[in-house]
View: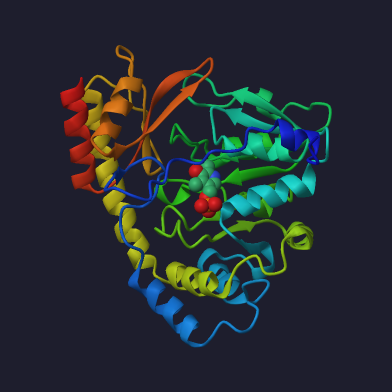
Length: 348
Ligand SMILES: *Cc1c(COP(=O)(O)O)cnc(C)c1O
């Protein structure tokens, strides 16, 4: 006898990429940044700690909102700070999609989206990318019960982007809100932020986990029109961001020089890595994120994943039904990527 709602009982549960707590792994499996965050982050957290944690944090992370407002040119009421950008995904699913209703997502993409629909007791519908990773109008078609669409842009695992013009077209056709998940956008050439001003159906989420090297801090945020943000505030936990993460996140976005330097290093490594993967016979997709999706047209890649793991190098093996499999390799330091590719060359 189970006391859980049936959809919870039936749920397999989202399994994040491995986070080994022992051993010396080269971790290229969860798209973390290989570099240390700006030193300003540790200083800000230390100061916040020394000031004491006896009081509840600011429910709206006003300090962060104001700095983000200045940086991006949106008034603070257009921004909501969250406990990682995964919290944005949870909030919008709960806000817009009721039991039995429909959530739309592209395929292959971030696996968590589907889990969020299942938790809600909602249905989900996957629309396949075209062979060139574009997305057809089918993604925007009306459907019974359709209440929300998720679009990771850049996408995972492909690292590809849809242009802001294309995203706007899709949003205008869709009968429901569109959440553009820009977790990786700091590594891309375009972004969809300005679209938020065009339509209250468009929300754009961001994360400090990847580009700011703060996956361990748990901080994200979302841009939307003020009445949409006000609606989301009703759903969130009162104190969804803690005082230390607010202090650290505010310092992080204040150090744009750090971001520019780190982004340049990662983009340079990504280019070298893509070339070398190609020379090993992979068919890597040109990425605008901090990982590269590498299928191999001529050789099974699962044994390569296992061989790497035996040598303490973790990458992500993904097998998408009806699409094929491949390795998704996060962009590490040059040394980490050389080590990974040297082992791959030996294994092949
Ligand atoms: C990593 C990731 C996130 C979540 O980021 P957090 O801010 O760490 O919660 C969201 N969307 C995609 C596509 C991601 O890869």
